[in-house]
Image (cartoon, rainbow, N blue to C red):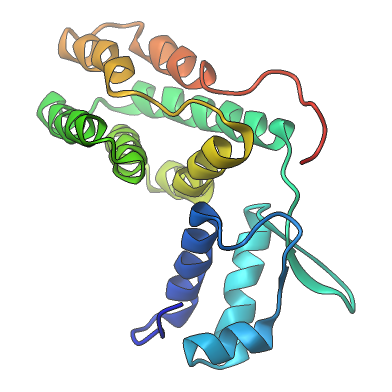
Length: 207
């Protein structure tokens, strides 16, 4: 871990843990010791505790009295529920406002470049940015805040690493851009189906 130097500390610590979950440093069942993490990051335990509470709200961390925090053993059902909520939020966002096609094409171009380079992390990042553009265009800050709270980028990485789920491809976003371009009234349904197509089927137990 790199020492945390800038504030707000809570947000930086949360992002550090999210990054470590995405890259596999923290694995399901691993214990996260507040004191040890605070020492590694060069901070007090208070912001570490706050960051872990936020991650617990994301259902990525679980804690128990006298046992501390651990990385949750995630299920396919967990991932499916995230996709279901996400799909509903993005469909609602489209009903409230439409994104600029030029902005979507910019993100799509970066997604194609990342795919051509075989850069999985960048593909995920640009794919999430594409969808964030759609949600932001709703003009609804509450909707955007709830969408952001899902931790979509880290859940996407975890779904690929833990469940071998496919990630959203550049080609899969092309029909969405075309639908927005022609102001298709069915674009919300198309978007919802696009997202649910990446959700896992029935759960097969914990990993």
